Length: 358
Image (cartoon, rainbow, N blue to C red; front, side, top):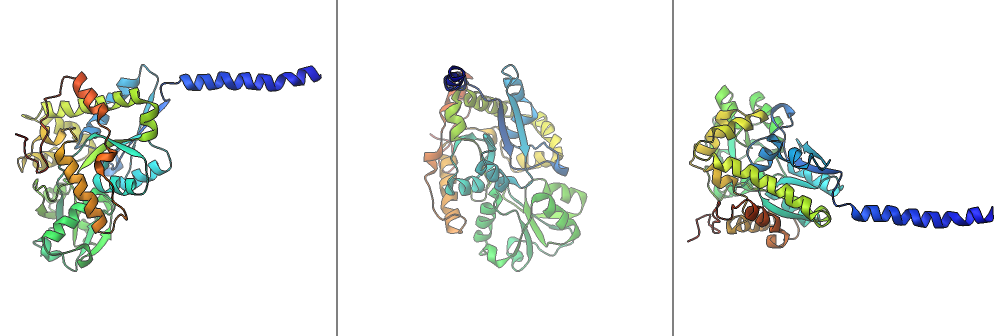
């Protein structure tokens, strides 16, 4: 009996080595967990408007990793950016699209993530009021009940819009509402106004609201988002990360290829429930380019915009400490994808002012 018992520790050690060796050889995850900061109309798990959304709608990552047996999960969150940060904080995510402010707040609070590519830059901001409202301008918002989705990238844009009109958020009766709740409150007139995205155009077309302000591509008031990943996943699975990034770039390329006639892009995005006409007006109504907005490049413009927004977030009291945006960029996978796809010169980088480099 003694000899039998004495063999157990040795067997456990051998078993541990075997299991350890198996873990060390693992070069791919069982699942890739991706989140998107938003949902479609009626909480449908589809969105539109950027290359991350397009990647999902076209099923590119499912197809890419099918042969590897890697499952790809997408989580769409009505709570938007703050909800995405919660998942990261609890180690429940590997990648996501994420707007500028929630990314900034998360990084400033210690979350370890890297910016992999631009995915949704130059987004417009809209302000809607009930159809019979007497409010005609931003200045008329003083003392009014205004819906703002706080903690999302629209909050910084709103801060700049108000500032340009001699107001601050404290001059309003600001109410924190997600997009769906804000639109319902506009219809029932529980709020006097609501800031939001191009889906507010649908309320105007239905006759229940009117749009009294839109950013119209003004760089002072635009919102941005990027595609990011956790440092842990990137470091453990660099080859998988490269394949993820490559497919998001392919989605951006598909949209950009349709720049002259973007109808197929807008049509795909209507799976979100947002009408075709909303995307058309948002992109083409003010002369914006689908190709430019689809650019994955982290160029001087994107860096400058984020550095400014980090400073604004500190100035508005949304973060305590600033950080260097350049330090959280990891664009080696983007560069690799552009090189492999022969797209090094497809998108032209622009300077800090958003102008083509000479």
